[in-house]
Image (cartoon, rainbow, N blue to C red; front, side, top):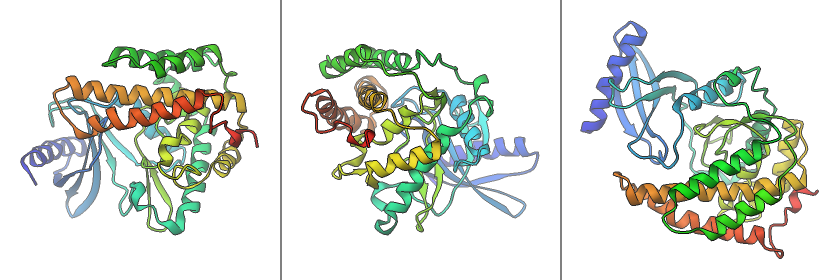
Amino acid sequence: MDERAEALAEGLSRYLTRQRRADWTVTGGARIPGGASRETWRFVAGSGGEQHGIIVRIDPETSLIDTDRALEHAAIDAAYRAGIPAPEPLYLEEDASFIGRPFSIMAEVAGCSASAESLPPEHLEKIGEQKWRWLGRIAALDPAELGLESVMTLPDPQACAMEQVDYWAGVIRDDEIHPNPIAEAAVRWLRRNPPPPPQKLSLVHGDYRTGNFLFSPEGEIRAILDWEMAHIGDPLEDLAWSLDPLWSFNQPQLAGQLIPHREAIAHWEAASGLKVDPHAFRWWRVFASVKGIGIWISSSEDYHHGAAKLPILAIAGWLMTDRQERILCDYLSPHSQHLFPEATA
């Protein structure tokens, strides 16, 4: 282990020893690539012959998005208790004295991959069906039954869409390095064309896409990751984000590089018990791109002014913003190539 990994392992050993009231030793520190909103590390924790893989999420010096670690932990815990494939949450620690920053610990889900590049071609349809059925299952959950209303803001159903617009428009305004007229035009469109209220308020994952779940070589989704943007809102927000053309890359006919859009929506509807309203869905798809631009602009601002010059921030701030703006221009054009036929079937 390098010096940083050794320091983390030593602090985590002290922490687990205190929590478990027995001697625990943490070894084998390896940082998992990515981690734009949290540093993510893999360790092995051992005591008396026991060995357990653990994943440690650590607040970074700078972040792609500002998120609340307690809300993230609550969302993972709620999903795990409800039978959604999620990592088992073990500890949330706000005290920075152990490893220098607040952190959370989860059980490792071993033998899986999250990389879109490693999607097994023979299992794309299987993974795609699971991906949107699990998203539908999340949409079907009752936040009150999960106890989430005590830790997350319960929005007014009549206002939750505009609250999201106001939030992300504020992020863009506060973090932009230069004017962003495309995003501004989209925000005006969203405000002038409000969607109907949600069919129900649900737990919204916030960043549900290919790359944010672990799958086995056999094509089974074993864990949905990265719940740091979770909140209570309209479940169409998650569906629209998951179907954004950005995640299809060079395969626009496939949602998230997996299955046709119509099939993805059909699986979601079957699992959620909800129907996709075309007008509402169009609105949420435009919103998804505005939200994306907000995230990418924040990354650009962090790279430009922040202490940590992380390449992922620079790439997101330039490349992803450009792609998202092109998608928005198409959405807002009367000749759009994305007139949402999948929502009208």
